[in-house]
Image 1: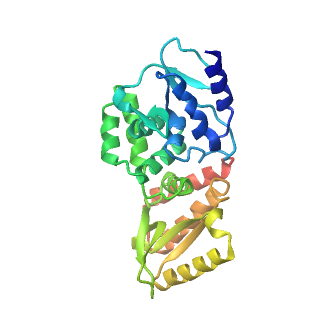
Image 2 (image 1 turned 90 degrees about the vertical axis):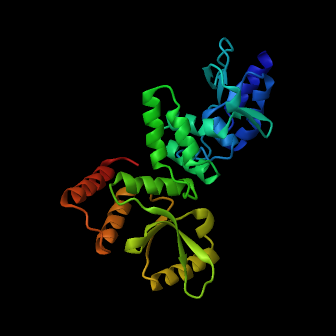
Image 3 (image 1 turned 30 degrees about the vertical axis):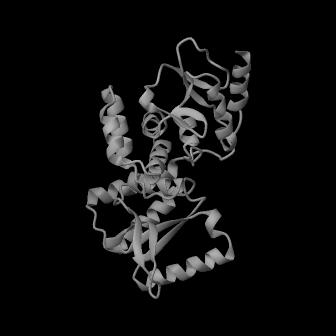
Length: 285
């Protein structure tokens, strides 16, 4: 018994990069099930979206009563229905639907929506998750799950795109559409814009360091965006350091662009947007 507890302690100190291997310790007892962020990570979800990538976090398990509380781990006593237990890559963990709902209920709002976006993009359906949310026993849990699910969008191609979309929604700007298809002049392939408003020919795109630092990538972006300008589109790029450090500047830029292109909010609505911009300026990143 000492052996598995020590393994759990050591594994809990490992950064998420190695977590998939460390969670194999769940196989040391058939009653232990990985859940929450630990299960989401094992399903291939980027659970480090709202933290520094190397920041360690404890592993999470559901254990039977009296099983103990290993140091460095987060455990919940209880059981998991057989229909909600899966084995993935040799690890016993909650199934994808149960994991998504658990994350919606227990993670902070930004992380919860980020996780649900990725699960939807990976193939879960809003209908199935909505049914799971409706079946929750507590009314507070049902409200929480519905509110997070209402914000989720499988069109987000990266966690940062989720951050951008939530920043726009929280600022009371019109809800953007994700993955807008466009055909560029002289190009027979369909291209997709990350986020935007087709009626205003305005889009905003995340320029991640992993895809936009090489000179060839930048030239490709320049050619692509020149073609979009020919079609009347305006593109507002978002670098990695904008959200959350310069959220207020970004929101103000997008709001002004929407107004210039024909968005006509009511006076009270516009005041609400301005109030959120001011609040974002006061908020530490």
